Length: 104
Image 1: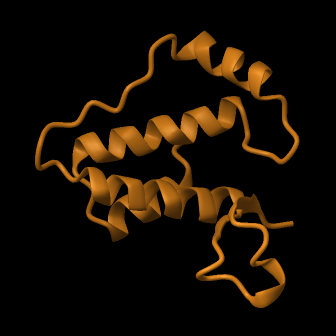
Image 2: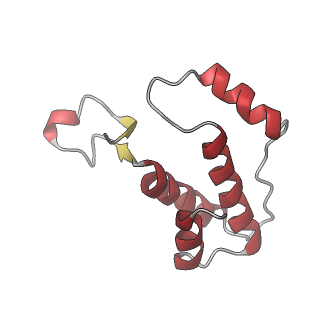
């Protein structure tokens, strides 16, 4: 069963088939190794490599790689509650902690 977030994002952004397939791959990767604070990266990569020994999002020129990256960000935010934490966009308390973090 396809993730509802994949369907929503693909529809909202009018993703082309290669873009949608790439988003589906990201969804599968996050099923295999859910992105969580403090998770063991080595174990997660081994789990991912068991299904994806080689992983590359090969998209032709003009397919919309920038749109795909936006879709990836939207997916991580909606499905896994990740949000960008950058000093330009954060409140004063969190300016010393730029990067990406998972919302509790």
